[in-house]
Structure formats: C-alpha cells, structure tokens
Amino acid sequence: EEDVIKHKPDPEIVEKSMFLLKAIKTETIIVGDNQRDIHAGQAAKITTALFFPKENERFYNFSDLKVYKPDHILRSFPELLSI
Image 1 (cartoon, rainbow, N blue to C red):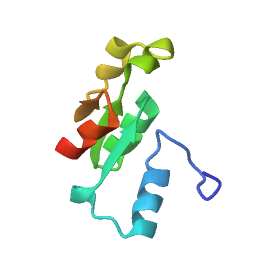
Image 2: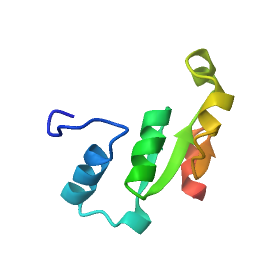
Image 3: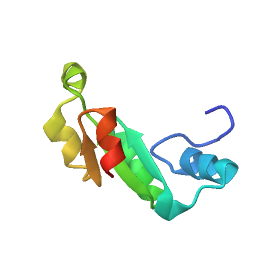
Image 4: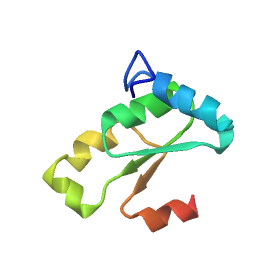
C-alpha cells in the first residue's frame, strides 16, 4: 500500500493492482474479510467476495458485513473455484 495515496475503501489500490497485472475488470474478483475490501471492489466495479470462515466470527459480525452486499460469500477458499 506504499505505492498509493488513497487507501481502501478508495479503489486506487485495486485499480493500480489491476493495471500492473493487466487484469480485465470482468475477469477480476476481490476477496476480502471486511467492508473496506467490499467497498473498494464495488468502487472499482469488479466482482466482490466476502471471505467469512467460522474463525472470523471472533473479529466481525456476519450480519453487519453482509449488508454491504458482496457478490459472493465464501466460508472457505475452495469455494472460490465455483465462482
């Protein structure tokens, strides 16, 4: 994040990463565990996924996070393969 001025939820870091990787928006997904990640992905107009395994219940409230309307909710990383 040292290469950007604005930090999440601003999309700058997502857009810069996509540029450096030559990523295509319609083929890109951001997987994150909090609202800043989801907002950054939405602002960058890419697919978003909330990663919320059982262990995250110690840190976050699932009901609070799902109101940000991620495109997908993942409980484990292998679920990413089905998207």
